[in-house]
Image 1 (cartoon, rainbow, N blue to C red):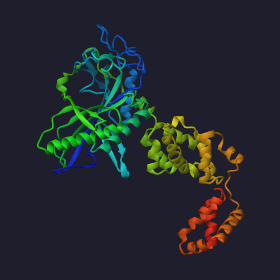
Image 2 (tube, helix red, strand yellow):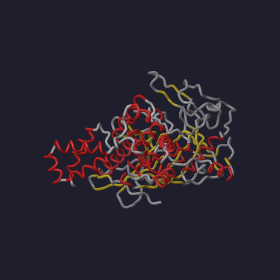
Image 3 (cartoon, helix red, strand yellow):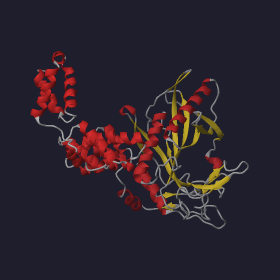
Length: 493
């Protein structure tokens, strides 16, 4: 696959191309761990969700969690990837206190999922397809705590043995914006599938970002550095920029890049060295003797595929085809599963989807999402329900209220609740459609402003002033289209 070209970075000697690959660690949605029955619940007391298997007590053997296998296969299907009917678990040897076995059970040469791809949308209507190299299952280590004592380090094994999917991309990403778009889209797919909750603050999704630079033209890849454990999409973009800039400056000063593992400091906006980068042979992989090769049938895969939910790209295409939404509006609505579900509930509550579907999208995106963002709420805590928003949209669509009145109505529903139709009746908010009444107001304003009449006849675009005066005089209740038509007739424009 040919990578999409990205934004070049300028250096003292000219432009540079950034080459990025990612390893995304996504915690599998499962009530128990990958090889034990211990709970995966977040936030328990330290070392309260631990089994004898997790802490590698003598004689304890791992047993594969079938639900984690299902979730990995479903994720692979969602990534348009090859599902390997036979895979092998390996021991990845490295010695840290957070791995009581002294090794991590992972997959190396024979992963459960092979090559796939993710399509991402970029600014300006551009798209890019990022290749997936593999997806494999592995254990999460425990958590080291270094700030609890001045002289001791503590360890919490609650996460030890939790199932992770490591999703490895090809080096197809070419700038920070593409990197952020890739993680955003991947996170959305995982959340639609229900295979990972994508909560980066809790560590359910984190990224290792490999960055190298080279002169444009597709020459050999430069020496890469890996930035570990980034748990924010914005930080991913910042880390890419900082590390690429660091490498460019070193090379342009006559130095060479050393392959190493680094960490990103968001406060200082820089990456710092952690250790030299390990290679596969450093881990001394070999098949885990306690686990047989994992084998399942094509029928097992087909059953899971048939039960997959509609994914973001499919939903977007349906919104464009069935409702007539613009690609941009459809993309905004499908970005999060909950947002898309809310919009679909609004559609279901509309009696005339063909007439009001686009208007409903506009109200969900601009009015509702805008207000939720302003107040720091998510869609689940919206004071305005899908049925209430659908009623407001329908009232606009059938001409009962104007857009201006609708905004006032939305504010009332947001603050006080209630049935929008009943509120319109009880508070006298109906739009004035009586042409005689509107004409009377127009005549009064024209008679009171002869100088403005002359200006509007000379420059028809100035007629908007009269529209504003009529709407103000009617308390925003006059039908805007009727006002425009009557004004054009009266002013002869």
